[in-house]
Image (tube, rainbow, N blue to C red; front, side, top):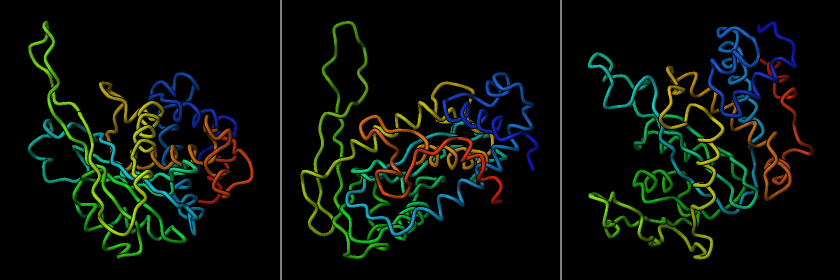
Length: 277
């Protein structure tokens, strides 16, 4: 068990949830790296169990889902030959579901971007919802089978498919990369309301995730070296996002808006969850 007092634990969690790397957190808190790593594992385990318990029978109405890319150990193209058969190195995708009304994140999953992880992610989400919802995803094909398997016909589901093309070249530019030049909507199941077909909120949440979780920040050496630690940090981040962080437009936390919590949690309360493991 970690021997730090609860205020120091809260200080470390605050650093990790504000975009600091492990070593930066050590310097700011004057705590050894192994101690920070141990707290990360313990807090991640406690937060994952707490989230699993609290996110049940949710009354969400409109859900948006998306996947966020990162990598573990090295980028996929740089994975050593002797590690190419392992699932815990290379490209790592975090699947996220977001309630468009309360901005609550009821479910997430860290894994690959294939059909298997899509299946488990969507089935986990379905098990947390109390009634029929409208759901929007991008054009990623594994969603089709996963959503049909988890919900059957008891859902209003549509895809928002981005159309990519090349913008006109500027005079001084030699190459113009493909850019999103439009979208089209595809109804899949049920009768989704067209005005609610959107992935804007979840894509904005992806930016928040990259800004506040160092392991998702591009072009840095703060990426995860172990998949287990990546999952632990995601658990801490999502619990803090739902229960601690006040959403700017809501003026309260997503958990309060969803009726799951009656107050803004402190990081000391999050650290107190370690006593439950």
